[in-house]
Image 1 (cartoon, helix red, strand yellow):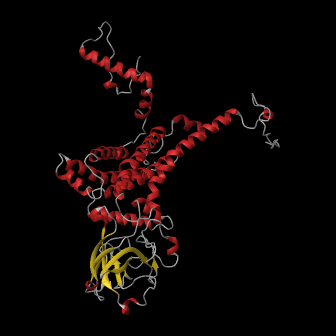
Image 2: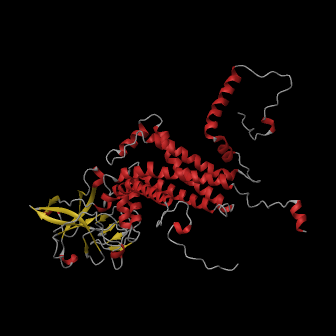
Image 3: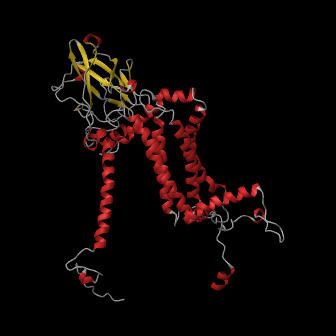
Length: 264
Length: 227
């Protein structure tokens, strides 16, 4: 099967074979052929290449600049949080009597523990900052307008979920700051009329901060919300690929000569 | 375009020219199978989703833990013109997290007014949980006031709000005397008239006027059946 040519700039395209030149052989060429054969095998059974090309080789408007990378930067921050979080979970113990000790153990004893925990801690702040920069870019470039309103709504849902991640993750080190911040946060939830008292009971797992509060926050932090965020990021990216990106607002639309003459 | 009056559709599939319709049939077999499959899918989802939801919320919202009494010292330890701090366990099995400080004094008729006839009021035990958002207040004897470090809540000697953001007086604990020892029971809330609310409320929830209805008592708070 012959793959369609990739949209590469002409300088990078392989030169056509000269007449009379022999087919290239040798181990390097065989490895290349084997790779192509493996990719072909998968593609023949999944047609993935079409979808990948649709998602990755998109036309972008004139004037696209570095501000357009803030969404990808946020995605990268999320991936970094996901990876460091999964590995922190290998040493962390979400129990009221041992959580602080296990977090101290990660920082002081485990090889690279302080580094990985630091990445997770500072990465969370970086992610929140990047989200707001990305949101500001979309707002000031008018990229939330028709037909992209739904993607703005999904983005706001992602922002709220990220805030929920920050809230639930803040308890996990289980020091004084974590504990009292969570007490205050849950009590702010409780000030909602009628449902508030039951909502804070649900968050705490009872009327008081107790044995299940920490494991509840841990399960929400590492299982429930990351799954939702990953799913919504998928929808967010699908809509970006489907609708395309917008030109910056300082570029005026160019009128083609034919349209101009026809109107006259 | 003129609206043509439309004939009402017959409910029988045979009269509506469906292929293979039976006499007297109102639902086609295709539609029946579609609904059955969707219904079965709904039942299957509900079969795991509802128990999971109930599991997450049920015991958190509806389970009332037992109320206990904890001795904190002989009656002579507690004066009636100042508070003595004592540490009691509110939640068992979670170590330090389950403990809280209470400020205890003997009842002072000049300050406390007429006693509540339904409960033992010979000792007053005041919670350190600030009624703004739950930070720990401390008692400052020089000022005869409770002061919260977080957002500047101030309470007077009885625990009533003297300044800052708190919405109601400090919570209290039931007390009783057994064998010469003062014992601390479950927590209860009071409004600004010091009316007692056995289903104690979380901080930030006012209990005056409409507040007591906007923030109903919960089913998860330990309380005394017969004080």
